Length: 199
Image (tube, rainbow, N blue to C red; front, side, top):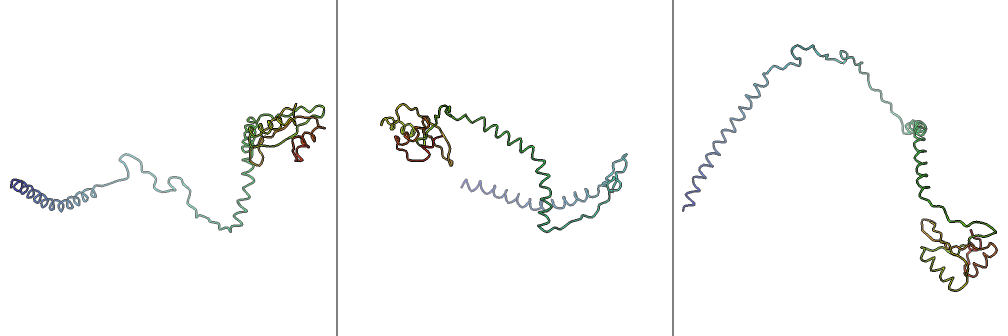
């Protein structure tokens, strides 16, 4: 009962304020119309008092008269010919920059290279390649196997990393007299023609 007696006055107040707002909304539009009328009656001049009149036309400002735009329609072949006529001049202008960039790239690549291990060629000594392996451990394992059989005693292996067809390989080579290359290949049971040919 107490709750009902509290809710009734609140509802009556809300309904009353809602009804009074309806008239306020209608009055707002008339007020805005009056305000717009007052603003539109204000005289506006582009010139400021005491200033000279600014030029109003392009001729007064000093611009030349506008000319009609000329458009040339070209078929694709003429367009390509016109474009290709500019290509030599553009290439000639860009050539020094491109050449300088290429030189810098070559210098950078050359700085990262280390000299290949090449034997001193004296008295007919050359390198005999015994095989190419996927990594150094595989090449060392093959050398240990050949040493265990006693076939290549007294020779020192060389492991040469190379890239062939995008694959990283390690070549197993030994330095030997030129006339002993065929016997070394036979002792290592290497049948490839690249073995006896040597490096």
